[in-house]
Image: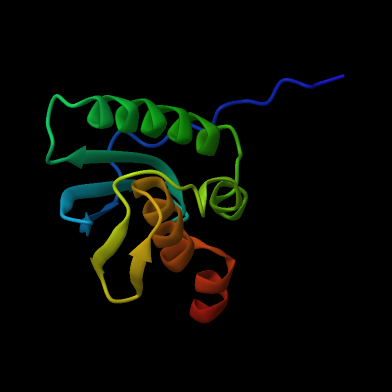
Length: 125
C-alpha cells in the first residue's frame, strides 16, 4: 500500500543556478531553483528553437521533473533514469566537463550529476 507523500514546496524567493549550454548547435539555458539546503527543487529550460515540438516537450519534462524532485526523487535517482537517453539533437556540447551528449535530456542529467549528485556532494564535504 502506498502512503501519501507531502510535496516539499520551494520558498517564494529562492536561490538558483542558470547554465547556458549547447548540444549539437541547439543552444539553451537551464535554470535550477534550489531548496534552502542547496539541492535542486525545480528546473526550467529555454531552448533557442522557440515554438518547436522539442521546446514544448522539454517544458513538459521540466514540469514533471520538478514535481518529482518536490515529492522526494533524489538527484541521483533522476540521473539514473535520464542519463544516456538517445535522440536528436545529440553530439558535441559547449561544456568541457561533458564534451558529448546523446540528447538534451542526457546533457541535463549529466550536468545535474556533475553539480548536485552524490559525487559532487562528496567533493564539497
